[in-house]
Amino acid sequence: MKIYKEQIEEHNHQHEKQHQRQFDFLAETLENQGIDVEKIIQKLSNFQIAIPSWALGTGGTRFGRFAGGGEPRNLEEKIEDIGLLHSLNRSSGAISLHIPWDIPENADFIKSYASSFGIAFDAVNSNTFQDQKNQLHSYKFGSLSHASRDTRRQAIEHNIEVIKHGEALGSKAITVWLADGSCFPAQQNFRKALQRTLESLQEIYAHLPADWQLFIEYKPYEPNFYSTVIQDWGTSFLLANKLGHQAFTLVDLGHHLPNTNIEQIVATLMMEGKLGGFHFNDSKYGDDDLTVGCMKPYQLFLIFNELVEGMEDKNTKNPYPAWMIDASHNVKDPLEDLLQSVEAIKIAYAQALLVNRAELSDIQDNNDTVKAQEMMQNVFRTDVRPLLAEARRRANAATNPLELFRKLNMREKLIGERGKLTMATGL
Ligand SMILES: [Mn+2]
Image (cartoon, rainbow, N blue to C red; front, side, top):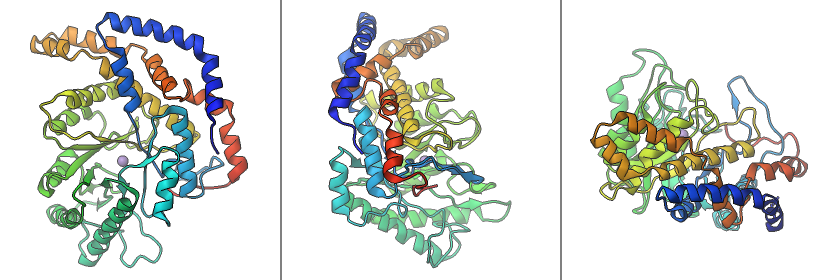
């Protein structure tokens, strides 16, 4: 299933006049404020957000899963789905693989197949949060932190194998998220569990190719409900520091307790050069994995404000972070949801690029709290969508990706090709 150049051109042609009017108005307004619009469009064009291989099917909850129809049946079809997204928005040019759900049987073929859609391989993800068929040792009571040496060994070997799969595809990073922890008080010795996790990670780190990064994700609870071994950014940061210069913390927006100041965490990690990756989603209560920006767009903007500040400040030594959407779609079409998420991320990014850094710095140095709020909210209330549409138009993508996706009946076509009851691997 493909979207053809002509279909995009026709769509863009239909919107041309209205888009041009909106863009010209915004560009003039911004130029009058001294903003280099061309530079922002260039940055928006370069911004790519990886799509995880498990996000292309309709997710579920522990109560059930309702398939949406036409879900990808294998890795090739997942790549095709991301190819659809990428041709619509030119911002989804990477896939993040989950092993073992998506083990490439022929890495060379998969690599060139993805590249035919303009898709590269982002960080690979290991899985020690569930048992696989014929697995010798169970992860019921942990993996890298497990009390049994044999279970830890098996989990370490799995991570090393994931690195090898990634190497064959051209990935440059591995993300480790552990479900390890405890459900009840005194079930686990905290200190010993963390010590064992560190030692296991050190063995994995020793197998990291020289040009690779290791991302350590954290999460305060779930599936364990009393404690998790890597509960917060501080624990992840501690481990990354002990491992070495190739290890980093990964921030997942949903992996915080309510009202945590995520933007401050971002700033702290960037000061130390240790923010390696970012997982986008949104939430109301916990790790809800909702569409990015659907609940707290202002928070997302404030986070991007710190990210952009950190990326533009030449004194910080933080590497360019890996961006990925980590959401689940229980009631939406996954592809539509992903289009919405990418749009929300790019809106927050574009708005953060509009912030006048020198002016904000002066405001902060003068403790002018009223002006700080005025400035940030003025930027937040600027409708930057014509900038995004212009960046897409220039890249031969759709000025309105979601509208074109629906107009071309892409989901119906996918159902026609793959069937109604297909179910993608994943959660
Ligand atoms: Mn995540």
